[in-house]
Image 1 (cartoon, rainbow, N blue to C red):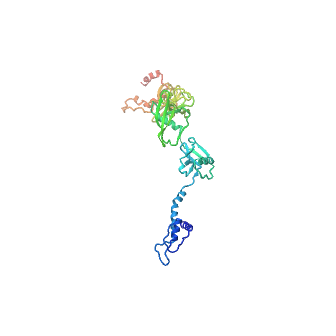
Image 2: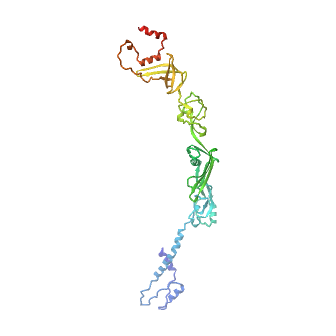
Image 3: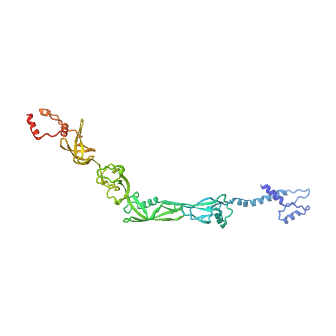
Length: 419
């Protein structure tokens, strides 16, 4: 490329003018034309060691011209043509030239449009964009096949549940309140979330807290650090809070005699002020019995439940007597009601005796001491036939359960017959 350009420039130069030998006419003419002076031509028959061929001199001139023009040509090649973008995102409240096009150069920071609302997207027609850019001295923008430009403004969205958690955490274990998990927050306005500029990347830090324990109202101001400013963004929230507890409630009306099933109990959060005493959990309530009749939706307290009665008053029960090698049962009637493990009185319907036993199952009473064998008497020499006739203690106890007591006359005559 350089040689071709040099040849072209050399061809444009005038052919060397010759004067008569020794007159230097060519030198004077070149001076008038503004060209470089040439060395004296050698005389005929003489040599000149300092002479330079004309062709080499022309190449040198062309190379110098190319060297001078190279920076300008490189600068032209470095300037790329501006190109329109089909979709852009912005974080500030204005759209600038540099947002709309690539290779905007020194015009990149010039504002041209107002940004859409936080978290929303707007559309610009290409013809409108080009018109606005021309007004800002931006021309020659390549658009390709783009018909419209989509502009989206980025935003930071804080969900409602995150706002509630921030308020509950700011009030946790303060002003007589409990854990944040038990604090229910209600805002004055129906807030579904808050949108902030995308540069607000910091966490919500409570800067000012006001709370009225009687009404439950709060007024909190949070600060959020901003990447673009040393001054944090302030966010004020107002509303009411209630401390709640998770409690088991009845799903239907329950009578005292009914045992609570899983379908009879549901978990709900209720204001702590409504629950006097310890609230019962669902796991603790299922399988228990109410101490009094209760209506559907009523919270269940620990004091409201008890073990279910396995034996009801005047209920027909089975009296059990069991020792190793001996198991006896007989019919009876409960004199008291009781749950498992309670001690109740029962009437033996055969012997008409009143016994004291422990409730061991539904409709079952085991008499006290039945699980233990009677202690054996120490070994002694049997000297009387009456001692040989004595009945073992377990058997005697069993007989007392099933035999009808003898009349007083028969008991009194028994020793006389033995004589």
